[in-house]
Length: 385
Image (cartoon, rainbow, N blue to C red; front, top):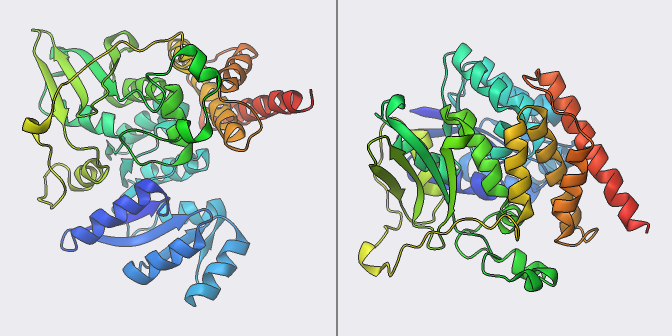
């Protein structure tokens, strides 16, 4: 029996994680859940699973949850998140939130020897070198949930690292891959958020539309698998049946294929190194008409270009990239800027920064705060024009 805590239980990944836990009652037990603001859904999850621990971000939300559920003991704020992540009853911590606020709880969980199932690519973008060093130092493991990295993780099992020629990350291209430059000038919010393959949160769906998510995934893969940037490739694969491939030194290519269902990589992260049967949909090879692959267009999608540039600069440039992108995407979702303003905000923020390498946790947090503040100042300047 593996005892699980889920940070971000009301988001898309968190809800799918609870679905996996419910489907495997003999293997998994939910010890605790945490969410930022969706108290109504959190109350439903408490009623269904009755976990021992629950944490919310604000005192007001804790009082609201207490009124809904009758619970008197509710953890609050970053201290509550850290308490849940390090709870001695927990074996596995699922980090299902993309927020940078989960960075310190993630690190504390690693230091407490917890096994990590990580869905947040942003945390490895911010502090991948630090996180993976701590995983090794504390003798624990980190298994990715992000579909592409879960695919790479599976393909790499049993493969001698010296035999790896290249990692290939695929992407559907998002909602706007086929749009012309002219069409991108007038793209609507509904079009941006209409991902053709995956049901995801709004922020990551925008990242998919800009192709920023592919750049973040390159940085994530670099730290997860210890492969140099020049040996990581991105290809657009509209069918989204193949989630990643590895190319070996003799020319052999191995691919991981599955339906677009996040419960599959979540289940594998929780079951690893074994596999559990399930009743999830299967991929039908005979119904597939084609498998197409394209080079990404860095001119039409400058966010990907900026991400790759930051990846090459390394260190604090990746922290700035992530923070500025987060601020810009939320500004777009709040109608403060246009879709094509997102890369401009990111680029202007990166231009004001001099990269530094091998950051401490405090330095990561300081650079992240600077990037967010700088991007927000630029957005406010635009709004007052």
